[in-house]
Image (cartoon, rainbow, N blue to C red; front, top):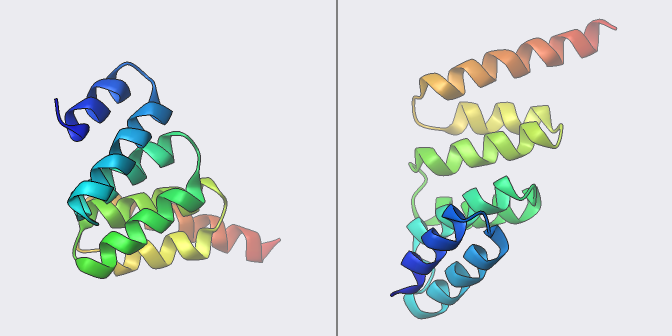
Amino acid sequence: MDELAKATAKAACGDLAAAVEHLNTALVYDGADVSILVERAQLQLRRKLYDKAVADVTLALTADAGLLEAWKIVAQAEYSRGCYNACAEACESAPDSAGLKELLAEVQTMMKARTVR
């Protein structure tokens, strides 16, 4: 069983830390493969390790700035940690996505409400 399959199995069982370790090993052998970086970022996001999630997708976006899934992770991580300007910037930078447009509208509403106070 390859490292990616092991990571998928561990994540399915809820052992996110072990899944990340398998992806770390996969990255050593496969290089900075963007799909593995995005998958690891998704796990880091689920673990509420926002800095690590953003670091992974930032590296992936360096290789391919059009990765919608990577932009979604950036937006979700920034939103979750209350960095609404960064979330809005990610939503605006991403390829066209209805889901991100909805998040952008929500974030803009929240930011306007903060300035009104």
